[in-house]
Length: 362
Image (cartoon, rainbow, N blue to C red):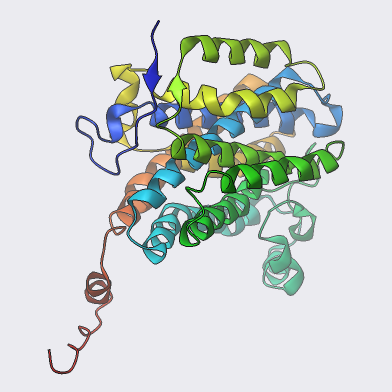
């Protein structure tokens, strides 16, 4: 019977045993693409018209779960390979913020003025007002800025709610690591159990039940930290896949997802397929696709009065989001990540600052 031990994730390097020794790049790309498809369906149809167990939305939630489980696994690996909490925070900043700022600027200063129902002067005055500024972080209600009010869904960029969630979870990993609890046998499982309890308290609240998505991250992190004890067996993966499919159209789908998806994600990531192992050799475009597709879909829906069929909406928005992601990776994200290993003296030189004085008496 084929079975594999979970391997550590090397940091950097594309050679043997390096970044291209697993399928994480492909899986993130595929999951981001599925999120685009699910949002094309949801934004065209309207959430109020979609059932709780709609198969397209279940697939989209599963894709988001894969992204979060992958993130938890890789962030735990990053913590282990990082020399200090400050350097860990610096790496996380470089991966998240440089790519995020442009999509906010593009949305507010390019797409916004083109599609707002407000006069241009009023749009910019509102955007720079306290009310407009307060509406920016989650991009949920576009009404303040006159955006997408005639669309079936009025959110500006509903994907961004996961960004502060992930940032908080990065902080959790760092806090546990600094406290020496990350490798303690019961610390992370206790946090997972607490999260499950909170989730069950809000189980029937569709909005607050999103707290369960943090479980995917935490379970992904746990699978990495316990990798020496975790064996990737086809029989286990097959059983979990059957559980996931069998529960898909039932009220137990969310519970089955939490149980099955983290293990299935790590199992699939370690299948030795050279074509998938090297999928990300031209760049990691999943983050950009995830960030850009939502406002692009909303813009297409508004401009066409929602007359574009769902498959066409998916195709157009994916093509546009991929183009933005490609530019973002090569012009911004890749360059930012090149600075992740800079020391203090390197940063001072890059900023044109004078070298730090040598300690007295050295």
